[in-house]
Image (cartoon, rainbow, N blue to C red; front, side):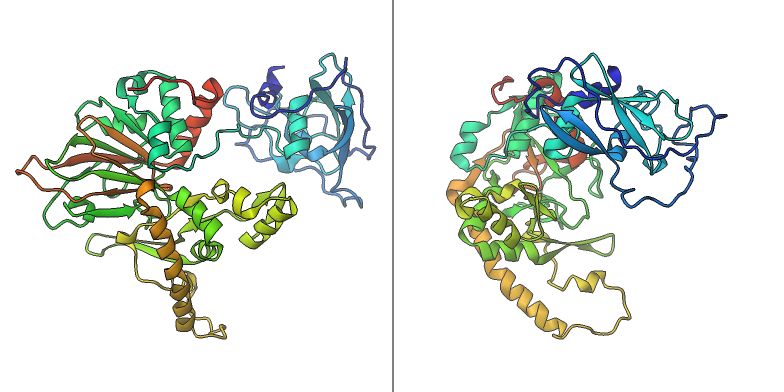
Length: 502
């Protein structure tokens, strides 16, 4: 039973009807193909570190790639690939029960493998007895799969779908103040449910504040490491935001710093940013934040052509200090995955997505929330590099000119289309009602999604030397954040109404 428990643990995140009356799993149709001979003088015990033994090669039959097992499930008959179900086996022969690593290679599955469904006493388990199994496996090898995993395959083509996390919440100043409360540092550090609340805020709103943080330089890394490993960059493991002479970054001045995101000139910009206020300025220096996804949704609904321009056309970003560091990357303002899926249908561009939504009876302007697909937003005017065609950075040299139009004309069209669209987006992110402003106090730390929430800073007065505004910052990548959120979600579920605040 333990072998398939992980495949069964999906009922919280995926609802499906259970069979009405099923006392035992009935036998199902068997695929009758000739089984190739198996070696008899070997014992099973291979791990992935050993080279796999290849099954004998043979010409596949006409339907050799369609080997199907018919299983009765919830009153209906469903066909599953024998290869798919064999690959799903979680028994101790197939998956190490301690490290959860696979003990066979998918490519070892014989092309003529087949199975029968064996009767069992547990109606929530399907037992498969294999014929023509992987060489060196026991002849009595049986795969046990949870009925829930099979239901998930039928409904979403995934045996263990991801948990249904809350949808992202598009916010303005008023709704953010109502939705998100500050969290206490000690509770965040000691209580996993409070940490879960913070991570859920970061998932839904992209922004949360901690209070009562110790005024120590190490506090910001301690806060970040509660989620996952710190992302070390050329700025350092942690770094200071304070006014310095001859600064190489506008953040290290007292000037007004407009809305932006950090490190877009890297191939993998940080996902989370942390800023701990150790010392506040005597005048000015308020921090401001705005939800780029809210602006993106409004642009998509009100100006669809402009949204498409910002999704298609790339912008160059760079850190231009050739005496020490040089980084460069090109990305559009709106990053969407390809293909986009709607109701299981593949859509390769926004036009196809709109057509699929209309076919489904949706009002595209009202019902289609593009932020459900929006992976990242990229907006950092201070670090924007000169415009160029993407081919200038990615095309191998030495090929003849194949474009009918000269490249300069294409670049001219590029910026002529991009600029009006970017101005619309810039207007939307600066709407006063959409900006959350806060004069951070010593002992406060802000955590925010660097690929969603735009941050800025008002200009401030530089006080006496050694007493100027001082924030200490660090970063965490997306993978550790999502891992921690997934683990805590399994423990606590929806944290919307739990966890104590400051």
